[in-house]
Image 1 (cartoon, helix red, strand yellow):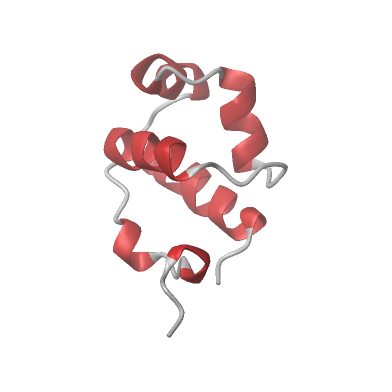
Image 2 (image 1 turned 60 degrees about the vertical axis):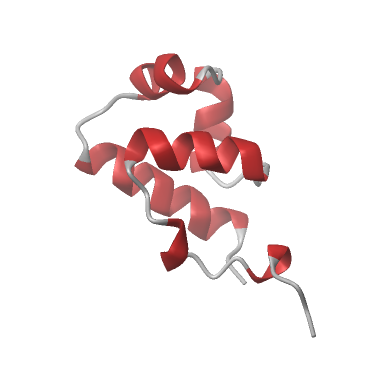
Length: 74
């Protein structure tokens, strides 16, 4: 399971790799810049919908995340 700090670090790293600023991600995803900052700094765990918006914008492969909390437990 990935924690919110690790997820935030991944999102921040991917944003920087793409050469984007938080305000550019904000415009592209319709999320506030402050909320993006909070996610990147591990203060919030984004919802699935928000994570999908960020993944599309940042071309983030969600398969690399071990999101066990949204997988069905047998």
